[in-house]
Length: 279
Image 1 (cartoon, one colour):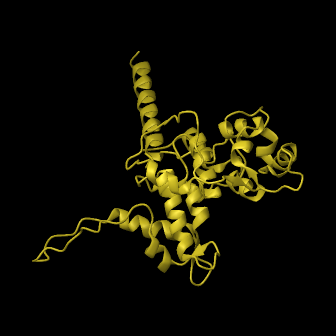
Image 2 (tube, rainbow, N blue to C red):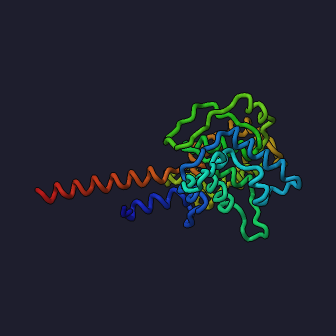
């Protein structure tokens, strides 16, 4: 299909986060769909598994350790070769995705290549409901389950989606839930929503930084020395509440759905043009 300039603009806008540059990792992650969307429990379990092999606490793992830990899904382990070896094996898509995700997020400039597993899991915290994605990202960043009290709105349906939580597993990840200023800045990266041009976050999004505003909030909540705050206390602040509603950084876009809508719009335009020409 042929995409119009409007289609291309809408597509690039979704991945640019108010800058002139596209976050190519977010784009490739969306383009690689379908893949199993993890639950918060699965994200936290994977994070702790990586931490268990990262004995130095560097925050990085090599390909060897990445394969050893794996993600919340595996390749098609039940593939077997037929006796006469004449039949082709089915394509192991999930197994290839595992390797692709390492190459997508690893720093290939190092020898051996190293993967920042926390940063990778923040990308996988993305959700069809961007506000839900923020809570998932906060859970990954604080290494503890942060519950969203209001019901989550699922905007789209993704294949392989499995976001139901195991209550028994969640007990392993309930904790104090404190968040440092550095962690908060890591979660809210690269600005926020660009749905509206004239709202209280406009200037922030242009600058792509929340440093001054977050520092002000920490001091307002009694932390003059900027020590970590309880997440529950931070989430009650009006600025943070509104920011979570506006922030689009953890929106999981369905490119296939976007292209289908563009194709339908073009088909409608063509039919309208044909009717006009008949008249």
